[in-house]
Image (cartoon, rainbow, N blue to C red; front, side, top):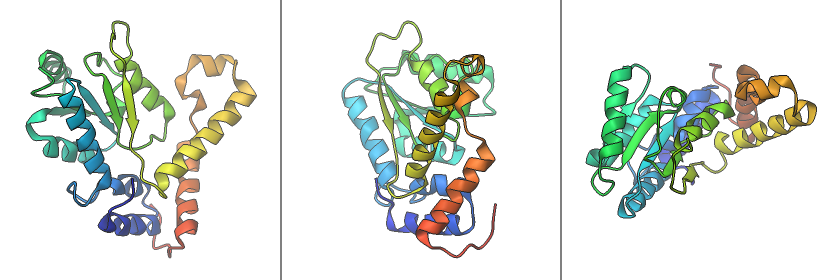
Length: 225
């Protein structure tokens, strides 16, 4: 998708400030579907899934993105699973999500960095990632929750990207680093032992991404975060 006009201004400001987290969330900063193409597309996917009797998991790294999605989905969405939600609350939400009729309530929002801990998401057959993840293993662990033994449905995965933004640049840099790692140590014990082995150094990658976007947009650098 493209940025909405106000979202693009927000993005430029975040780039100028070196605010990497702000850059990643800019595609949802419009606040409503008319001003945010990403949000509009996400809601359309959820509505299509509901019409087809399919349940949806929406993943994001950011709590405010999940809260926004949950608010716009209203009665079709369960309370988000995020850091701070107790194991018992999490289980209650998951049980309700599994038991619900998809035609009535079909969407569960979850913070992607909590997805590898005890979630069984086989009830869902549509997965949406709101933004690329700095650690590819976060996405892989989240997907594995839906593909666990017992999944009988075809799982459709959507990755929402904003064109000409840090979203596209992140995917390219991560792919390049992953290929370089695999060429060097594809069959090493380290690579097999940990899914994080192919993850780039967070801070080094962030600096590259921010600097590249500042250069591309030609924005004056106001600060570094």
